[in-house]
Amino acid sequence: MWKRACDTAARCIAEAKEYNKKRWDKTHMEPDFKEGDQVKHPVFQVSLVKPYFQTEEDKFPSRKKNPTLPKIVKVEDSPAPVKRIIKARKIRINGKDKRQCLVRFKNQTADKDKWLAEDAIPDGNLHLRRFTPSRRN
Image 1: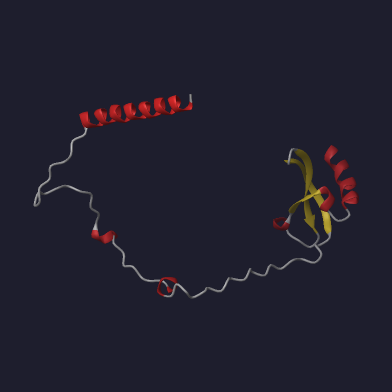
Image 2: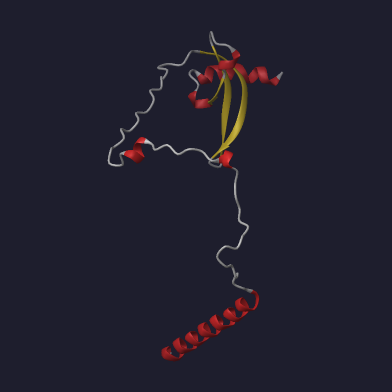
């Protein structure tokens, strides 16, 4: 049974090769160029050619490059105290609605306002209680 299946598969592959060769040979013709014939081929402008400069890595492949250190980011120890909540919005994170508030900080301008999650606002309950009645008007 297995031998017959292998023989059938080999015969089908041989027939497919022969069929594809006939189709290719019908339309395909080898170009008959002779030495000295002029042929057309794609070219580009010389002004696009740029000189090649070897880099240090190309000149010295065995030299190891020192890894660059990450930049030091200044982390604020304690954020400025919250002056008031300006707006609130709900956003969807991982399929759950989360409430965020636009917070203005004391002694800061409007361009320093930040959207913070409700639980990330220092004294959030106090400020939310003040903000909610003002929204009703």
